[in-house]
Image 1 (cartoon, one colour):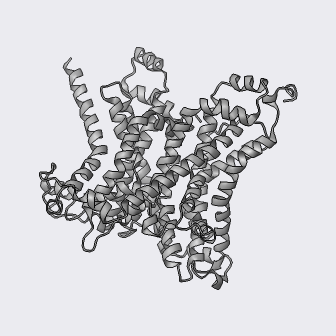
Image 2: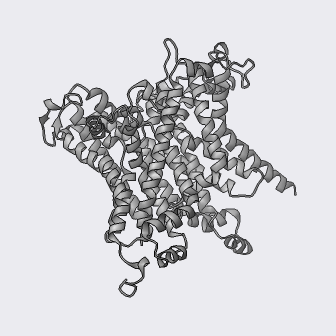
Image 3: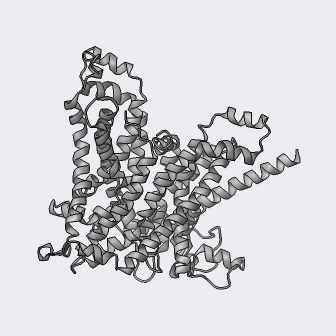
Length: 301
Length: 276
């Protein structure tokens, strides 16, 4: 920097940098950080959304109540359950299908485009499409299973805890496996072909080639995809809201939180309690996020 | 020889299974949207519809403000995308090329927003937007969407700017061009592919977003498409035919977008995560 002082490209330019950066900082300041601070402030009161003037300062007692709220703890477990199953199965399917699409074959471009579509459409739309297929009276899934004699009577898929959560997980898998496939596929395409040729000359079979070349090479990609997806899955709202509204023990923390803030806390004094829940959810996700930042080697300079 | 043929057979079987898995729900939505009600609500639906009618497609527009909902989504997602690209490209450029103290901190600050669970700022953001009289308005959704999509935009674009050859910018500086005019005249035109890729992702995200739209737009005429489709109800039965028709209507443009910009979208999705 000192040696290149005269070169305009290498001069420090705080004024331009500030002007270029300030709009972004303003937007995220107003829309993300200010509300976050405000949420924390709200969490210290017993208040409702509509009558904030009637609030009572209660300190941290909302947080204490939260950890005695069996519904919250149950929903937290539901969220973890949902995330583990969904992300786990997605990863396996993602690797398998990506390996398949990594081969040269006719219509490969078409298949890749088809895979992208479930990812691109609104989650609300995919949830409605699947809700219709899972419909107990007229759904294609029951019709199909009945005709194969797999089931004797129509199953109310979204009505019972034993089947509702798996049904919801299946929709999330369908919707987000494409993300896994395309990320892993991009990772696969960066592996130099020579590695495989060398291994083949050494007499390694397909299984050995996968474990000694492919998997180690795509592991970083899988790691990043896993973290992205886990963070996403922990925040799940749309699918549950549309498919069951949280019935049949499918409620997740986001669904419960939204309901507490805007339905229960609308006129009765639970808005502060809901805010404490929001802060707690933020902290839970942050723990994952810190893990994420540490895993991903951010290249800044 | 036989062995090879068999393997090829299994491979294509696999391809067909994958295609069916990802595409059947769309096929079924189309079929359900054009079936007459008498066939739709029957326990023995054929895989191929024998009678076809387009009543649902008409009703979606005549019985509901669905045209308005599409317009709302277009305005909100379109404006959010354009503004996000303007703001995000400036910031991305500053991070990629300009020298200033605390760059790492700024980047971490911006990226941290992408981890925010939306629900954790939902209540307070509602209060803020309400006191600014922005509930049930377009800016009340556009501004939050810019904030949600800007981290990814800045990240992808700064990666893109970093990969551009420096020589052209250097030449412009030598000719006495300023930072802003160099950015506008040299850098932006060259980065059009990166802008398109990021813009598509921002648009798709804003078009699909549900939680904020559900909370900040409470009048049916202000609903965006996802909220409208989630809220479809009838007097006696769930209007499945109409729900499917509406789903097909909003899926078609996205399918076209995906088919045209496939490579760009994938480039945007994988940027940063594979390279990083």
